[in-house]
Image (cartoon, rainbow, N blue to C red; front, side, top):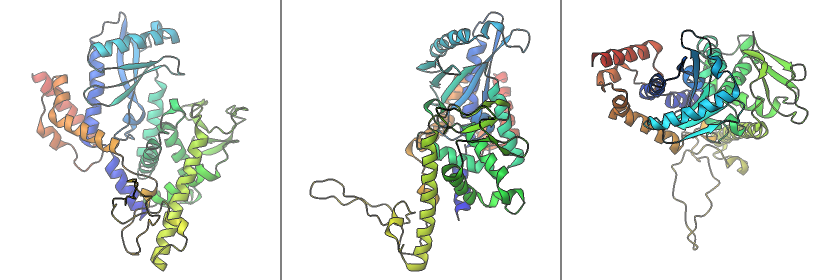
Length: 420
């Protein structure tokens, strides 16, 4: 039952073809601005990494982009932009350039971050964009994530990662610069769970048919069982646990921090910026408890007609339609009933809804992108004509289009542009 819920959730939350194309066009807008900008002796190229490159993004996810500043005649990074101060100055210049060209209304330059970036929002699509300079390490990590999600665990990793990303997003714990956990770290934690799972290792458990169980076990492991003080996660080869002190990832003043070895650079701790891990751990633990309470309450209802423990009603799945709360003499809404499970033992229920929901922001963002796509606003800005046949060429089942389809559509758009 939970496996089916996770599968349907992922089917819904996965980007539609229109959403994916809109994001591709945002990158194209950026590249055109860079191409028209005169940078003596330097060639600027916009490259994407993170969730867009790996197709592990939510409708509300931002685009992680890095501007590679190469020498004009080769692919070596220009020495003029090799230092931290020169990168910071370039970010301010780029921010002005983006506003002058109508890419965005406002840009926030975070110059003192470990990796200086621009945070902005593309004006037409409303998609948030994080821009760094010469950060090619992000592209390497994206390839690692793609390899795990498409080759090693093609039928399990993506579903669990998207569920956890939505879980953290709706609790505002998904931004690393505010102490949250990023997409790369989430992916590596899920990979480690699958690698170290004894039944998966022995071939006794099909991960693709037990997504719900694995999601619950993720919350149990990293919410209640994992030893954050001494253990470091590693996914190299077949996965293992390392000693934090031996990896020099241990912080005497913050021993509770999560440590994940970067498979692209073993000296790098992926989660060293996730200083809010204690709150995240507590939230994982709470999700595990909510899941278990919901499942136990459901089985008690099936057996006895109602949960025999009233405490299990709180947070349990509710199959009854929402009703307006009764109002007292003061006019204030009274507290809702604690009864959360229908007395009908065969009424449909949702266990996943005890921890996840689709919020108004997600729905609004998805509607905006699809509406903007079909209005042709972005196509007009890029000088390409809206062509309905291209929409029909894309998948319409709510899943991410294959690379061949995306390439075909992009090629058709380019040919049409040249024809004009």
